[in-house]
Image 1 (tube, helix red, strand yellow):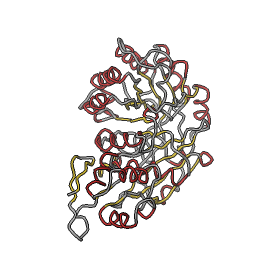
Image 2: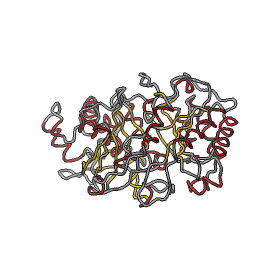
Image 3: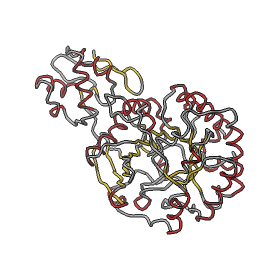
Image 4: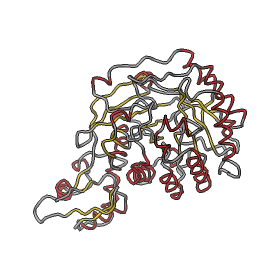
Length: 426
């Protein structure tokens, strides 16, 4: 009997003598310890597990035939009893002179997801990964939830998005943001397993502070994540400072209202020493007024009393999605607001606010000493930006969206400086 642990717990695969495994073991998504145990149960020495990890993760092998330092007989047995998940690229579309690429990927069961790759002039190579097929959160301004939720991805399917991008581009990915399709914390086990494998020295060896996990606000899972004491960046999708408004925009707020969400964010800071980023999509005439900005700033200021962050000045690490006021980020405030002028989605009647409205919102937050950035979006024209990913077809991927007006595109350069990136893989 072969036993390993997958995203849902202990899973058993029985191999009949002379026959194919009743359940094929997927090596991608397994930890080094699990791969060593798998090798041992095959009658192989433990070091074979490390060899398998090397081929599955850093080398990104898609078949056992590529694992040339294993004997032919072992490769044949592995092909009979195991597999290595490998997603299929259906199509891709790019913009920003090829520095932003959106991929449509097919999973083994035929479902599709979207993944976005972004190169930055400062040398960062960032992948925005999906964690579910679709999304069940129902945020009213986001394209991903239009068709509902199909299923969560396995850890193998999450991490293979990064491996596939590295294979297709030849670049080494330096940052990963869990901001694609789906709610990462609604798929907690698979997401956290993927986080650990991305960070592991035998995995992809990406620094924990170069990983950003976004959530719409699942309070119990935020508390569970805090207890993990990981040094990744947590981004909470807030979008409104009052329950009356957030109930309309983010339905999950009816279960965990703003006060509970902010307290969970504060507790996360207490347990990890890491600054929390609050994402806030700006919708013209709905949630972008100076009065709401003042309410938001006052809430964050009151919630931050008594909180401290470690290594002040480096908390922008792991947020490779914008340009920030670095001097403000070095302050003591444990919270940071990341403003996102709404990105167009076909069939939705929301509007992207003009630059003046965004600047007025920023001004109110700064008056209350709340660190604030306005995200410099990538890939808006190809529906690859925040809130635009969905289960598209090859044909619809090729249809570009109009670019934002010139005055809106000018805002980021006028309003912000770049967030610095740390080097430590902690």
